[in-house]
Length: 199
Ligand SMILES: [Fe+2]
Ligand SMILES: [Fe+2]
Image 1: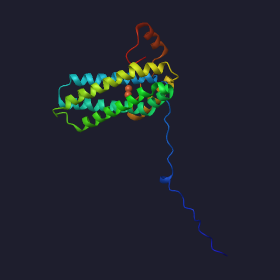
Image 2: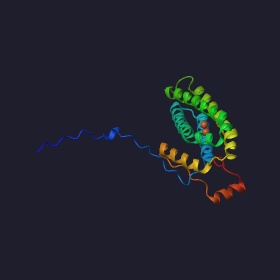
Image 3: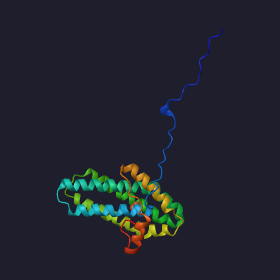
């Protein structure tokens, strides 16, 4: 009887198989995209206000670490989900605004990197935080005054983008994103005016 021949094909190692990209499940009771991003903006403003009142260097370091973390998560969800969807909805009408927004993000990231390397005892630490605050204030103003109103008048899907942003933010922070206000709460808002985090 002829000897059995070895098979020439080798099994593909599991580590060399192309990894399937895990897509996040949209969060169904999420706030709208614009409400979520505005709420993030207010949160970072509150942190900068805390820094202005803080005295000890350890406390300042903690607040700045929180600011850097919050800004990093916010810019990531904007760059990966919100800006591409906004570009898609606004087409040429949003090109300049979104290009500027991305360049401004680069400036903010550069300042964050610098602050992470500094010690809160350094002479220029407080000044660096103030300059970062000014960068962020300018960027937030541009988004809220020009970008968001344009999106509200476009075919931008504020609800489904909000669900994706919330899912990504929860995955990055491990903390739940506050659910969208109920119909009852929105009814109250209509009577007394919305809170800063809502639209
Ligand atoms: Fe933003
Ligand atoms: Fe932004």
